[in-house]
Amino acid sequence: MPLHSKQSLHDRLSDPAFRKAFISSRIGQTVAAQVRVLRQRREMSQKDLARHLGTSQSAVYRLENPRYDRHSVSTLKKIAEFFDVGLIVRFAAFSEIAAWALAMSDQAIDIPDFDRDTGFIERKPQESAGMMPRTGQPSLAEAQWRNDNLVGIRSGAQLLTQQSSPALVGYAGAQR
Image 1 (cartoon, rainbow, N blue to C red):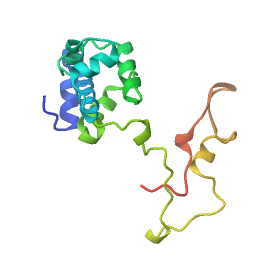
Image 2: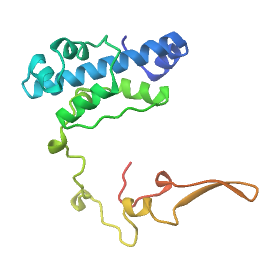
Image 3: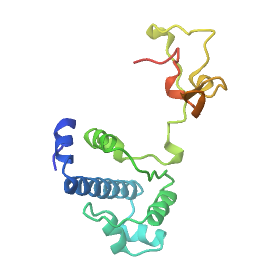
Image 4: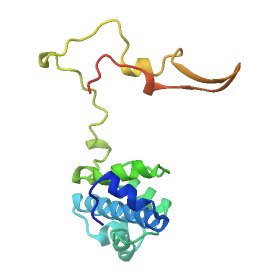
């Protein structure tokens, strides 16, 4: 199914049968592509991977088949552990899944293992690029977790919810 725009996808997702097929295809295609890329990066055959996972070559073949839709979380956890990558299993809004599907790229499929994950490297603003460091303002991490950074929703005098709200905090070094 070619995905052209968020609006055209929204129109098609108004049909419950399409929504069901769309989610199933996103899961099947993404898992299949990622398992294949992870396996090939290690120059392994399906049989080799099956041996390491304690399963059969035909089970690995099914996982790499984009039409397969009976993935177990337990099997996905074994694969994530073997390749030393994270696994996210969660419910999401259809709009989030649509945006993710429309922006899908090779980089989104090729996940680095823990040792190659550069996401933990702190990047500092480049002063030579015209950005001057600001003083007197907390870093994003400091601002997100300050005790006085709480948002409450009040109904009359009763506090209904109170939670830390990092999304509402500004950051001097952030760029748009």
